[in-house]
Image (cartoon, rainbow, N blue to C red; front, side, top):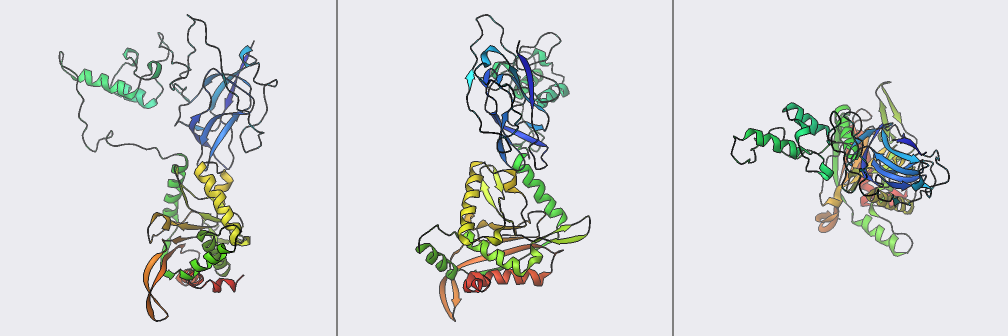
Length: 442
């Protein structure tokens, strides 16, 4: 006889306590192999695939795509030892928990169990009034019809609440969702019918502007939620100030062109700015620090772990280049390229997104000149870089067209005063205008 094992959302590390289901990789009835990824989840720091340590037949999934689950909540159940699962694996458990965190290479075999004989009852997806709801996506196992005294075909707690508050008996409704699933629109339709006088045709009920149902609601969770929390905390805790300066970047762009003309890996503008930042932080270490509020101490950090803002389809992320102060411009270019590609592909690990000590924000890629960046808590400063564009500029006493960029520095006023912040920014601008200034510190 096969035994049914429950696989729970594992501890994803880095202090994470919850994750959002982005995409199921298996369906009820599929045969899974040991360590085969079964679900893609998004945490506050990265998107990862979670492999199942059991080999067998998937008998239930818990949670729709978009549902947020705490660590330890059930993800799915697997029938181990079933005849259909004979090809899954000879062993029934691996002990591994997460791709990229100790597990071996995942086996991506997937096979649908043979359909049940004609007349056999369908396999029902478990529906529980409390705890993580079962999945009922199109093409998966159907939702069971409600039996007397049993659960009704409702997954969303919001639908249950709407029905309860308005006195709607869910058992009397026919769901319009997949396999008869009762949706919010079904409850609202029932309310409209009740509101109409007998013999009239139901018509939509107008919704007053500004009511609770007006507008589109977007949950703040996953990476977007983590960014929102960090930005709000930064504004709440850090007394920040911003200073800025325009700089003539013509010579810097010429130096970059000369570097790339000799062959080898291409050097990016971001890499040159990063190299300038690390040199400036060596002169002004106050800005490579953090504030221990509990101890009321400023902690100056020995290494520069340089974060850089990267816009992705899933929102803003800040990958971190480790030990940036020890890297050459070529090494920085390669690491920026690697992390940017991983960010766009959604494969950054939690370790790639944590531990930064200073952030470089190139918002010039959006075609804007200036900004007042919000510090990436718990760091002490962020350098913002606008677009580099041709502008009239006084050069050597004459008006000329030069490549001009605006630089802005937002800093924590607890770690330094304006003189230090201004000195840092002025040194950065001097290196942009005359790259030979940077050579003196190398």
